[in-house]
Image (cartoon, rainbow, N blue to C red):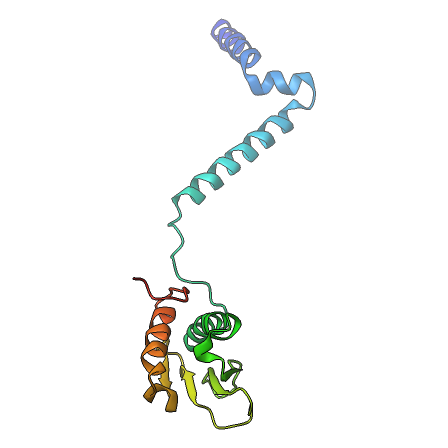
Length: 168
């Protein structure tokens, strides 16, 4: 029986000599370093794996703090100023633009008023209300021959085309 026990112990000693963890511990301190690096590598791989399994982000627009009506009116007002006023279009020379986009009433708008009487009655009102991107246009100028051009310009700008002339 002693011989059998000796054989087992010598076999166990030979296995323990080949055990990598035992070899590392015999070299001094490597035992604690290897499992830590291995754990970090495993955690990094697991994190990358989990991140790649995530669904793609939704394509919701980033909220800018501006209502749909303000965004629509900014687009139209910039184009109107560029095409009618800044370009010195002769048809709009008798008018001046009064922006009221930062209205606290929730109705961003701009007005065309007589150039010589800025405080006068508006001849054209272009506005959007609430959270709608629909732009309303009204005023005495819409009943003039210029009204058809104003309507087509506003519709084009509201659709996202900032050009000053209608496509031929």
